Image (cartoon, rainbow, N blue to C red; front, side):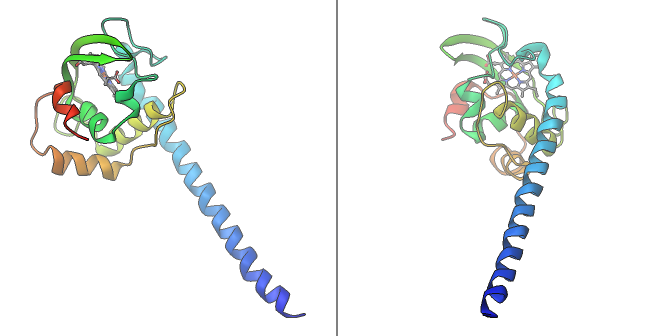
Length: 160
Ligand code: HEC
């Protein structure tokens, strides 16, 4: 009979610990998204608070494959900017997206880039995975070290 409590006790402890880890992760994600929302104020002039952009001038982020797809591409868009003819949600755009990355335009740290992109990927019905600051650092330092110019959509498409 003694066996039951001795099994149950560690088991219930493990369940409690697991529960707390999940809560801690959720709290961290909520904090990142709240920060991303504030940082997104730097994007609203063009992409609008709704994420819908401005027809034929600024592309939408809501429902955009660029925003919600391959993270290597979208990280590069925000780090270095994007320029040239692009199709987003079946509409054509040909404008200039400014660079936000460290040492460029807005000179944002990697965690700011990660937070704003996580917000974009989780807002207005988008439900793509969040982006970590480690991934932004990886792309900035390895994939595109020293890059100063905006990417063309064709260049970005080469990142699979
Ligand atoms: C001055 C206007 C402007 C600002 C500010 C701006 N963008 Fe953009 N963004 C653009 C334009 C224009 C394009 C399309 C570039 C092209 O035509 O090649 C674009 C493209 C994009 C794309 C890829 C296409 C799409 O619609 O999904 C993403 C993602 C994006 N921007 C995210 C952001 C985020 C996040 C911010 C803020 C951190 C931001 N942009 C700030 C103008 C802007």
